[in-house]
Image (cartoon, rainbow, N blue to C red; front, side, top):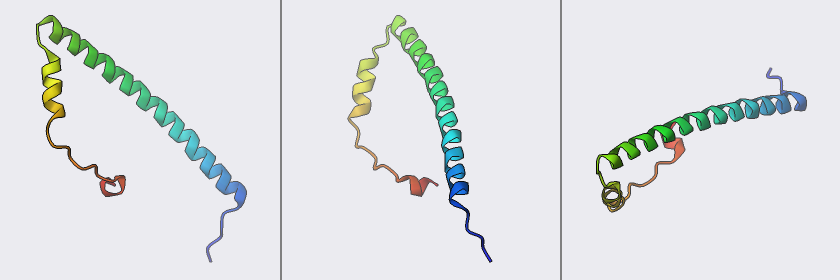
Length: 75
């Protein structure tokens, strides 16, 4: 026989999940910030070397767009 969790247990479970996910989001933001800083450093270095990145950006925007894959298909 399967025992159904009480309302208090379910509330605790969901609150715990949200707390964990919020911490994960904070860590992801830190990683994103580091990646952004590194990218800016490389952009600056390329500009100092005379590379025009705006031409490359325009080339990347023109190709046919790939369809987005639903998250369910990724998992």
